[in-house]
Figure 1 (cartoon, rainbow, N blue to C red):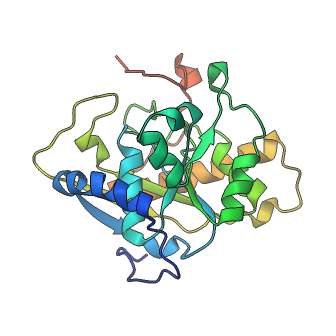
Figure 2: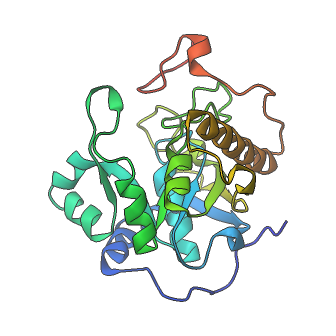
Length: 256
């Protein structure tokens, strides 16, 4: 597998004014904190909509993936809580950069039409980041835990590619559950992009909970494999399930 990022290949720049403002605010700090090493960025489509699904182990992950995407020329969209769009300045930047508002009801479930965001992404040819774990992994050694169906459902309903990705090194900048950023020494963060998931075996089947579970497990296996390559280690054989350890899948949790 190729380990480097490709040269310029984008058909049309997605670096709008709003994204350039975000880059102006974030890139200098991230450059001081981090040296990025991107692997197999040729797996990211040059144009058109797709879902990219990375592992999640640090609260700075979205910034890391956002910078990585900026470097290869695709601007990421995130499904953000609708309430954030009402925050002055930040809300304006979210709207102008094409982020996707998601209304939430108690217990963290999404309300409204669950296909609306998927249709918006497909129609506008956007790249959207969906973390399949839904929250920071509970796995003690920060391997990917059990995934949820959001990323898979979004890709299947919209008929767009689903691309697994893995990063490692962000925990050295901002440890899991920590609020304190480590500045020195400068850290190295690896981001590896996998090939679009082959979903041909699922064609013609009903999009029910069983299918979503199968595809989600296939996605989590691909993400874990990418992370194994970066870390040079082997992940546990069994997928970590927080429920088996008396843990919730949302909110802060620290093992004792």
